[in-house]
Image (cartoon, rainbow, N blue to C red; front, side, top):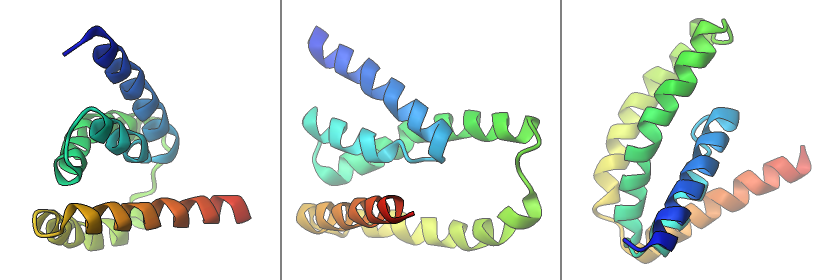
Amino acid sequence: MKLSQKALGWLGGGVTGLLNGLFGSGGGMVAVPLLEHGGLEPARAHATSIAVILPLTALSAGSYLFSGSVDFSEALPYLLGGLPGCWVGSRLLGKLSSTALSRIFGVLILFAAGRMWLS
């Protein structure tokens, strides 16, 4: 890995962590394109992004838990639905073409941008 790639990785990791702490796993929208820019095909970039985001999310969640910002009664329904959804999504990742995966990710980013722009 060249020095410029390492610097991009450190900078991208910092931005990913910052966004993850602010928005809760929003860092994937930065990590995936950077990983693809580094040469990973889309499916591998998405899977690697999740591996990067897992410890960042755990640290953010711990911080929010210790500050008293989390109400589990509000989070529980999302967790109960999210666990099977996560399993299905991880199974679909290997079955989707790179083009389909990139388009789905692009629509998700546009949807998120539209929501933020209009709120």
